[in-house]
Each structure stands twice: as structure tokens, then as C-alpha cells.
Image (cartoon, rainbow, N blue to C red):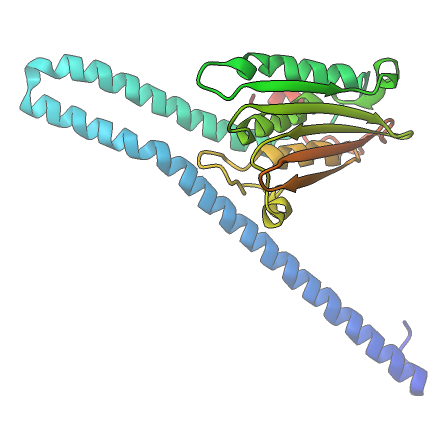
Length: 277
């Protein structure tokens, strides 16, 4: 706004421009603060995740050194056992690093004509053995798929959609602590499609729901906090929306709303072949 005039309008324009500058400066400071907080949270999460397997690595090596010094005749047996532990923890480290790398290298979607119903069927099929696995809660799948979506296609990246659905299904299975129900639902909403994954598990508080999609936030003891952040990234890259409805003690429903024909991405984030799976 032109504030060169010296009348009341000029003074008003000057005040308006100053207020605009102050708001922009405050916004920039807030963004900077949020970026710093995000990096601190990332550093904290990395330190926590890497420290867990490093501690048993240290203990195992120390035990090997003590065994060699105090009882050389049995060192070979101790070495074999320790080597297995070391390899297992190294594999754990590689998995953790792979998950963080996976999130940082999310590719841009390569859109294809696919069936939303078939996509959810394929994702569930991968985890069907866990529905009645020994030592795990018995899971009963419940299907509510919109029949019109068997023939009508949507444009989506099948690999990324599968990854998002897999994370939602795993999240649901983790939430069910006793015999429960996993509900898979699709809805034809005209220009969009809703894909819902619901569980009859422990449910979430309002505060937990608000923080769910924050990278590295997790309520699980051994989680990296990346699963739902990956889901949100996939949905966002498809120009869609995601939200959660949950009640403590009654279960949780995740809803992905995807446009049937999203615009092609302007610029690929990275090639799919670079993603560590």
C-alpha cells in the first residue's frame, strides 16, 4: 500500500504496512523456531533409536573380552553366541537407519489407473497370516467396500498407496490388544474416494490424535514415529486429505480422501529406485 501521502490515509497506509512487516517477521521467526524444534526432535529420536541397539553391542563385546581373558578354553563357544547377538543388533541398526532413509527419500507419485478396492485387498492379504498368528490377538476382518469402485478406477501410485495402507493396517493391528475387528471400507464420493481403516483397539486421546502425523512422534515403546508421517506424505502428494476419528477404549478410524484424478506432480522428489525398502 502506498504510504507516501501525509494525510490520514497515508498514516493509515504506513501503519498497515508496518503491521504487515511485523506479521511477516513474526511468521518467519515462528517458522525458524519450528524448524529448530523439528531438528531437535529428530536428533533426540535418532539418539534414542540408535542407543537402544548400541548398548547390547557394547555389553556383548565386553563379555567376549572377559571370556577370552578368564576362560580361553570356552571362548569359542562364547564367541559363537556373541557373534549371533552382534549380527542381530547390527541388523536392527540397519533397519532403523533404513526407515529414516525411507522417509527422507519418499518419491513423487507415478500415477496409474488402479482399483481402490483391489489396492486395499492386496494390502490386507499381506497381513492375513497375523490375524490368527499364535501369541497374537485374534483379528476378524470386516469388509465394507463400495461395489462401484470395483470397476471405476482412480489415478494413484500403486506402490505408494500400498505403503500407506500397510502402515495403517500395521497401526491398527498394534492397537488391538485382544480379540478385535479390523474394518476396511471404501466410499465413492463423486470426485473423490474415501479409504478407511478402522480398528476396535485401545483408541486415542484428543491430544494423541493431534500429534499423530508429526514425524518421529510415537506412543509405541519401540516405534520410530515414521509410519503415519509416511502415510500423510503419500496422501499429501496425491493432493488428498487424511484425518482420524478415535475414542479411548473404543477404537480408531483413519480416513484417506483421495481425488480420483489428481494433477500430475510438478517435480519428482526422487526416483523410486533410490528408496530403501
